[in-house]
Image (cartoon, rainbow, N blue to C red; front, side):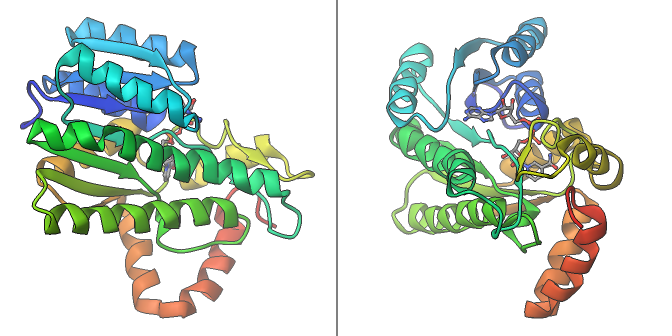
Length: 276
Ligand SMILES: NC(=O)c1ccc[n+]([C@@H]2O[C@H](COP(=O)([O-])OP(=O)(O)OC[C@H]3O[C@@H](n4cnc5c(N)ncnc54)[C@H](O)[C@@H]3O)[C@@H](O)[C@H]2O)c1
């Protein structure tokens, strides 16, 4: 992939799935990597692969919900490499449960990781990205940031919030003439551990939901997702839909107006993990 040689890229949630694939593809493209995750085992595997490629790597355990730690981490990454060009706010979790039966803490947890984690990473690194003269913020939302489905209110809320936050940031950077591009990423179903790592409201069968997700929803490999994302980053795109499913549902949701809700509720009840 062109355009990444010598760049310092930060990837959160790099111990698995899309984050791991992004880190590997960035390393292959000549970038220097700062990788982090709460899963230190997965992270060590990613580090091993990056080192085998010959990339310069800084590896840290980082929980994206811990704001002070994130701020200190940004300072440390800048100190280590002398600059920071790109952050991929990728770490995320999934949760399934209707609003009626979800606990406040379940909804808050998803917002903490999937939304506040992105805000923490963006704010912590923004001064360094601006100072680099060639910065890029890449925030991972989801197709669930484009339309809502039953059972995903918490995740929908977090991913819609990432979309709003990131689109406004792009406008601000452009208006202020800052040397920072901003891209929002909307993956469709990607073959990762996300559903297996997910939690759910009481009474839902997480293993069954994960198996449904793996067989019926996730069709794009993380490696392919990473290449699609990096191509969009290279082209300075405002948004990138990852996978053919993402492109189709985006069009349907936009053309259908609020009418999409009836259609998607029906489809989701067959496809989305945990639905009736
Ligand atoms: N897989 C999909 O179909 C899909 C679709 C749309 C969006 N996404 C988004 O893509 C991103 C990556 O997900 P994935 O599919 O690769 O899942 P994954 O579960 O394979 O990887 C997510 C990684 O994030 C890490 N993580 C979780 N909580 C964390 C925290 N508090 N701090 C730091 N790291 C944390 C996990 O340990 C894991 O290694 C997420 O934001 C997810 O919401 C995934």
